Length: 452
Image (cartoon, rainbow, N blue to C red):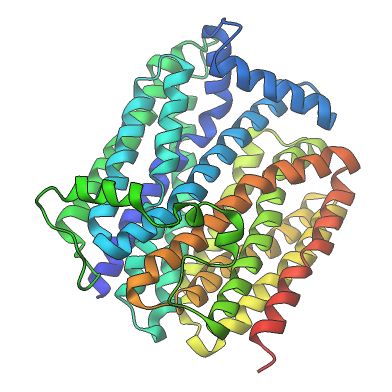
């Protein structure tokens, strides 16, 4: 089983490196398409108009830096929203037709998105690549389900911490590679060169990594679902028809249905109530966390005059702390203490927000950032591990799909919600209010999981 763990770790690591390598390029991509797209209609014009309207509504200063951040935020919210739509449906299909075929289809879609990105001379093609990539990003929830299938309950925390470490390492290496490859061409004042050189190089690197992942999954990752219905003769068409005919398909994209875990029809009573509580806690925590994470770029630029390099170092610091905690410390936590560590993680984000809000020097700011990093490095893996205990094997895909879908919905709303607060009441009061709201998740969690 540990060989499967290693494959899952490598696949997730390579996937996140490929996905995150584009992040440093968003400002340059935005600037490039501003130069080449001159039409007063179409997707680019709509997004540019939306960003300008947001700046006016939120009283955001009109500057290239802030507009670029909002551009990246809108694309990120779209990407998360598409994951919210697709993750539960892919989980349902994986529970009925096997994990591996669904995973391969998702990864083929991701490879297609990177190919389109490499060929995206016009903005519409670039957006199409992001849409396909977002819809196919359910590969992560399927991989998490596979990890659940091939681990005993006593080892569940270890594999979730390992998956968290893969995420953290990927988000360190990916942006670093993207930034280095892009910076080779930033010395030139001709932004158009981005399309032909650094833009293509990062896209082709992501495409190569996605194809490598396909190879690893196809040849080295076994099917972990027992008694699945997949067969080689016309199976893809059968799966497609059954998705279309799927009973109560709206239950898999209806937020109320997902918060109540209605598609998990075999889970009832106290177990369903516990699962619903975990879903609410996870959603609220990630909504507030993702909003704070997104506005840190605004905060550090306004208060400390951080440039892109300073902000890159800041996110690297967060990533390194998370790798150390998830790759080392968290993997040693015994199952009997997972619930307490989850509570600790939910509580730690509160002082982190307060310290960051009141910080006026780098030492104080990085102290808050350290606590912030400790919180997220423990919260997501432990909550995911707790969710994985619920449901039989033939519903693990739906359970993990809904769990990831709620997180994606939180990451869709969080940046927009916090941006509104940030520019309406100012950074200090925004983070202080965030710390007050962050009291809710640990209270809900404690009342449902720790009184016993």
